[in-house]
Length: 365
Image 1: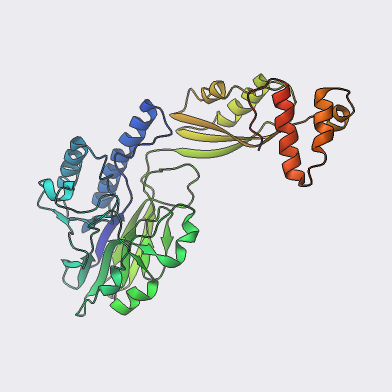
Image 2: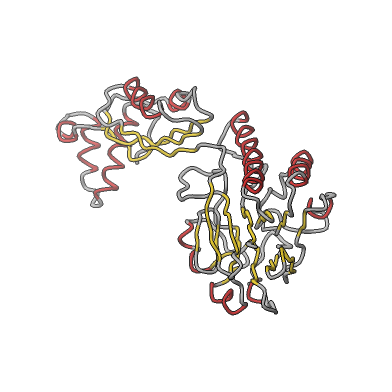
């Protein structure tokens, strides 16, 4: 009989969402709990044999006792084994919630870096590895040497080294490995966490963070339904479980003649959206347009949260006409013409003209 696993990672319960006001950040944290409930429901609907989590289930330094009690209750009610491999944000230690909480009998927390086996059914064995510190530079997967004829799976919070750059700036390597380590160890599939963008290869899968964390995230993230057939072949299916809606949009405000027209363009861009939105304004504005960023940020009354930021935004000054003026600003434009770098010259001229006009919105993209 086939073995079915619902796998997820990087839920980051109690994440701070520092960009948001308190009401919005509280809502986003609540949505993460609802996402976990959806994962547990997916496992029930699919008659999964187990639920696995490859780390960063919560934030070690921020997690509350209430959240741990929520996890104990939710996992205890799951009706199937729940296997947890701590990551760098929820690392295992003597004072961690993994060690101090009284977990239900169906919950198994892996506690060793060297890996320990759990038999899901005869012939299917999963090896779980734990982070025991907030930074783990060692290759944990390379040391695995399973024996026997079972289908061997790994559960770990680990960084495939070749795709680190693909994940974007700021992502650090933890427990780095290369795919060949899995082949040498005889691991048929590694169920991983750490990279928030979903990624699949022959011998590993990153499900991605199941509920959005940041603006600009791309890819079909969620929970992974893994089926190990009787012949040892493996099928992977992605399921969307997110509760939060997060959108990243660009709003063209080019040609707007006053700030009300900018606001109208922004409202039009937001009208059909829900959840949290980051709107980036771009375009060339009339010189007299003065933006009120606080007012623009309050435009999304129907949304959970709104961030408005400046993109490639500039102002349509007639520099030839201004340079011909017998004025201070005319002299400034004539002097700035000696700057060789055209991009630097543009930024200096625009910033200077706005300063001379007494404007306080001096940032020039």
